Image (cartoon, rainbow, N blue to C red; front, side, top):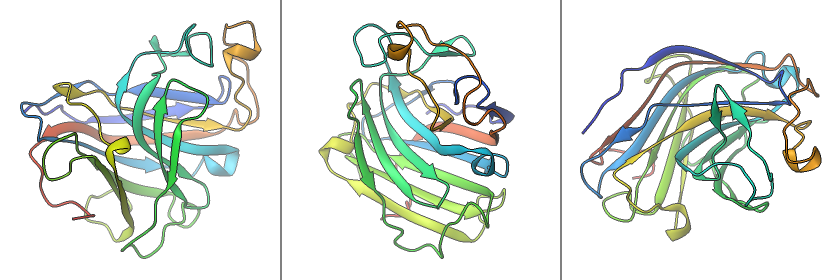
Length: 230
C-alpha cells in the first residue's frame, strides 16, 4: 500500500463565487478488498458564521465539469477542474451529516446519516474537529459502504461527537486501483456556469469572508481495520 505524507495546512476561502475546493494526491492500493481512508482536522470557526453552507469531503473523484453535465462549463480552483463523479460526505452548520453521490447530473444521491454512537455534533460549539472517513469498494469487509466519525479538537483520539455510516450498492465504488479525494466548501450564493454562458464568473457572492482551515489531512488505501460502523 501507498501512504502520502500529510500536508500540514490549507486554507479554503469562498471569495470566488462562494466555492472553493482542492484535491489531495491520489493514493494507490494493491487489492480490491482495500478501503479508502481520509482523515482531516477542520477549523470551521470562520466558515458557518460567515455564510458558509456546507463542507464537502469527496472520495474517488472522477471526470470534470464541462459540456456534458448540468454546469456546462469547467469550475477551476488551483488549476484543477471540479469532479463530476464521486462519493463522500457533506457537513452542515447545524451538525447534520449527509452522504452524497455525485453522478454528473443535477440530482446527486443524498442520504441523511444518523449519529449512532457520538455524544452530539454541533460545529458552533465544536468549530475545531477531526474527522475520519472510511469507504469500501465492491469486495472486502467494508464492501459497498461508507463510514464517518467526528471527534473534538485536532487529535484523532478526541471525544467522539458523531459516528455513522451508510450501506448499499449505490454507495460502493468500482475498484480502480486507488482513489483521488477532495475537500471543499460552498455557500448558497454559488452561481453555476450554466447561468453565465457556460463560463464561471469568479465574483464575490454571499459569503466572501467564509474560510476553512484544513490541517493534517491524509488519504491512504489499506486493508480494512476497525471502523466506527463495524
